[in-house]
Length: 152
Image 1 (cartoon, one colour):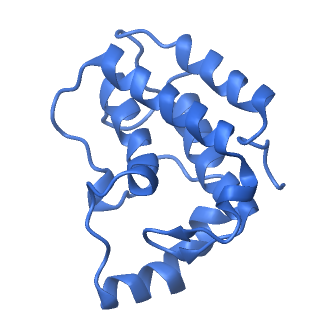
Image 2 (spheres, rainbow, N blue to C red; image 1 turned 180 degrees about the vertical axis):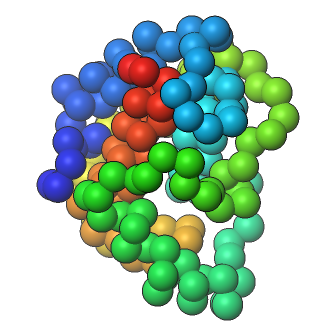
């Protein structure tokens, strides 16, 4: 694994410990989302795995995502601050902090319990089949980026 293994119990627990350090008053170091919106934003990656809430991209957008965006998302290279996000990940309405925090923790726990072998070769909503390492990088890097955004 290029990054800490989000499928490992210790890493999942570490990420959850960081999430539990957030409060409704936590302020971002960059960006425009408040902490509850950030938690909801982080849930979107998991919603695309565990729900049918988000429509799959059409042929043209799928082509762009697989050929131009995938490498940035699934590599170990950190995201830059204030990077533009995909429309499905934009959270502009107000969210309940405790509810979004618990949803995100539940998704992290479910993913850790299922394990990397379930994800190896699993088809991504946006990028097609991904290796377990690519899933790990996508999940961990996104969470780490936003937790650092909020100083945890």
